[in-house]
Length: 306
Image (cartoon, rainbow, N blue to C red; front, side):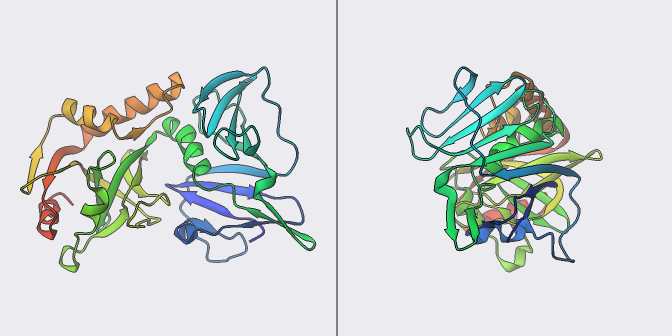
């Protein structure tokens, strides 16, 4: 593909490439999230569009810039006169970069409209007159961009599985080890449920309605559907010796939800917006603890929620 458009949770990233450059996407899970501009039947429905310029020009220097956040192993964020620079090391601890990304006006808590990706040499392969470039708009960069964009919409990324039926869905949140992938292996044809994701979902408020979306960031079960449905219920997964659905208060739900939400904690404005949206979620949507045994009967507890 010479260019691509990546759509996740109603946000469409539209790439712009210099002549002679071709993007290569090797992850099949991303297939349904990619739109080819040349295709007449490309999916529609995105309500937000973000321009992404991909370039092989040298990356902007980071020396002397204020550090917003640094994992010290993979990526770091810098303040460059109101823009945010994201820098991904090519190897853990390496000073070379895989990519450096400029988010124009990224220090303001708005949905980023302009993104420039400076690609490092490790992403480039030359094949005759064409330069092939491993798609940089892939995990973890696409997930980071969503984390910057979502709070202002509003919306959040949640460590959760998602199940849907007839346009409505239930969010099954849980930290690592809570059993999301295990639970997503239980639905049978009798349930009539479709998996949206087995690891990461996005929730957004669109035209007053709370929506649940699948993402391409699949877990071990490789469940990743490019769909959005009305959010009908929120559950928190707990492996147990019996199957039980327990209603919980908004305050208790918020405590568990915040343990599973991906928030830019170093960005005070976006953090505040994200936490405010989490409060909206637990106040407007019925919340439960889902205690379950490793068996298909556990999914029966969701029948009345969707």
